[in-house]
Image 1 (cartoon, rainbow, N blue to C red):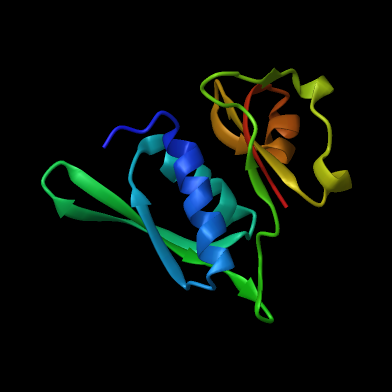
Image 2: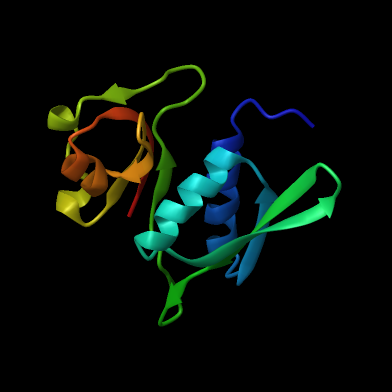
Length: 132
């Protein structure tokens, strides 16, 4: 099955998993998806993730969702840059999301990182998604 927005598909799976109170979800693996999950793990929005080999050449990401007192750690997760409209931002023009409580995940020349890490590295890039 061909997807026009694989990252958007993974974010929707996370949203749906939280809504259904699932402990784990799975998504097809790719390097970009794994990099975004690594940022979410570092920032404390998910517990863990791992790559599982389904068959030769096909891998899945097993994502362990995080809850705090029965409430999802991710209250809002939305795709910003889409295949039909790419959104790029200079680091000086990148607004704080929910006054710094939320994060933006950027794809920069130095890799995928959160907005705080991008500000520290003084590098801008494509705004992939926002998480709160």
